[in-house]
Length: 257
Image (cartoon, rainbow, N blue to C red; front, side):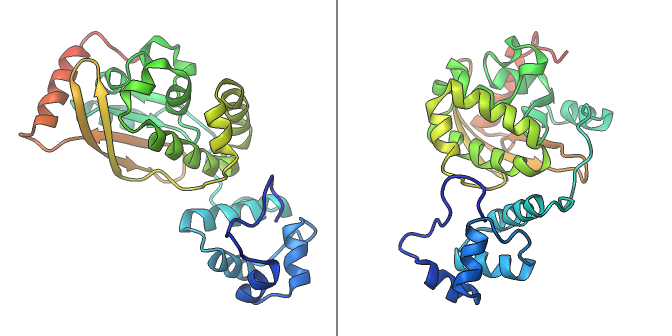
């Protein structure tokens, strides 16, 4: 299916081999690859996904692209974007001193607790409509030193943004256009077409106020509205938790609008 530069990603796999692995004719596969077959079945797409060794996230993304090309209603269509709900805002306060954010599909920061704003120095200086964790990663000067493994964080950001092409295509295109102009590294990563959903993991920070700290992160996804909550946390009675308490003290004057 032709959706941009590049088609087959598996090195050394010829069309004939891929078609054989997927159980389709070479001619049919070529029509899909060139965009002349606009409605391949889910079974065919599943076979191609297995042959190409796509991850589960990439497979879901492939199905969404097929829906868009065929003019079908996208699967799991999210609700229109809306402000963070009172319940999520209350949860932001409940998890303190853990830094936490409510994000939408393109990582716009819909709400954050004071520790969340303090964890990313300079984020609170931007007007609320500009606060976006992907924009911060690529554009804000502080991000380069804040993230101990900036390359990994940047790659994760771009791979996740690819998943928003289906649920929020216009806002994704606007952000991609802006960041491609502002950052050659973003443009190069975007052209790699890597796709995966941000899930739980760890992030290492070199924070100017609390020093080096590695935090576990959890992503909570309420059903149906395209919003999710990102929480950074540390076990009680650890040096990392003590650092979060210190971060909370430095964040007393940082407030969400």
